[in-house]
Length: 247
Image (tube, rainbow, N blue to C red; front, side):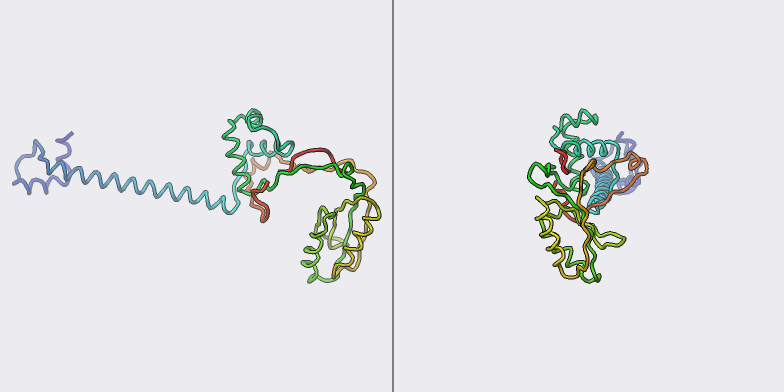
């Protein structure tokens, strides 16, 4: 091996230093020079490899920061299981999806940091806690400049469960639950008192046959390579746990 190293381009400089004689037995300086050359090449290659790794890692971190990454079949299965019961043990989830508990934790962490999982909550049976009346309230706002103020004010009303800016004859559609019709009437008065509201229409719920909280996760999301983005608020806080049905 030492004889082969003499054929390196540095061998000419070594011969000059040692009087141009035969180098069948390389001198220590020759070994030192050749060793330094190869060491520099190894260091250069190692630095390039580290740089390449940092670029790749940075790219994926940037994608995660922007909330853009693809969900695969296992991610969808984990999300479905958590939506059914977020108190399900990690080992049980791993058994269902074919992963170890630590791998499940990593997947869930990725889903939380990416803003896919935004909350873990208990679902309460409204009737059993005294909220017997459910209704939908259509609200018409006179001018667009009042929309922001309305959204802020209505968010302060605890009995308003959902507020949707919609198309059609109403500007907003609210889902509310109250203890009785008297409290519903008081709530409607409070809504009408908000600046810009010129009309409301209330539809009281007689009965509820379906009230889901789970998002349907179609396998096509994986097949299409769909990118899912981060939600603006509440990312990493907590999926809703499935409990008793509310009405």
